[in-house]
Image (cartoon, rainbow, N blue to C red; front, side, top):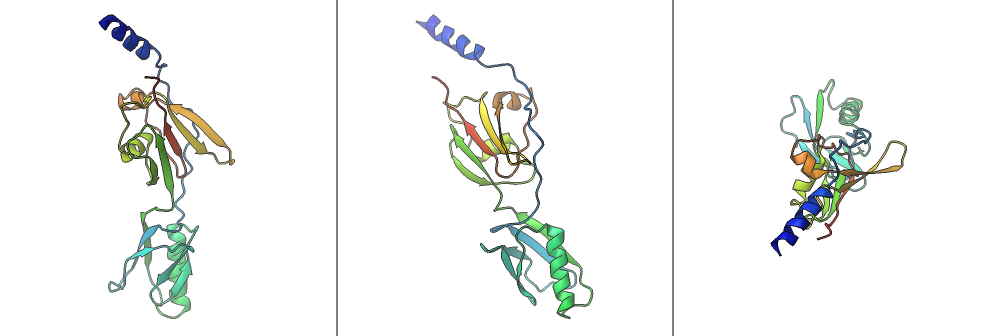
Length: 193
């Protein structure tokens, strides 16, 4: 009977295709802000003001002196320009230096499902890869087909592209890890046995 188990193991290993880098367009980088995102704002010389702001569900944020402004869809530099313009236009400050940086992109998410320990939707972070996402989902289960992870991505033209990623080859440094973009969906299929 041990030879049957050994034969099944050899058969299973031989079913794994040769590892190849993923043919996928580069991720669409977007630093625009959305509902739930958190940004840090500093106005030089105004150290008493709050520095951390969370974008409301309607895409707005309440800033001292200028009240509610719409920031959804804006880049950090555009938010800085809007705040600066309102401070000057309202004659609150004459020539303010406003610095805005993103602390957390909660509006941008990736989804990981299938044979991972904690399936779900996770905040996307710039520079995130397939391996990072799987780690964030608690890692693979013992039933996962690690050499056949499915990545679904929306491309610039609005179409969806599906690729198969060999996670084993990534973790063994045989192929490069795959950079993700917000909205990517990863599914880890189940092995046959």
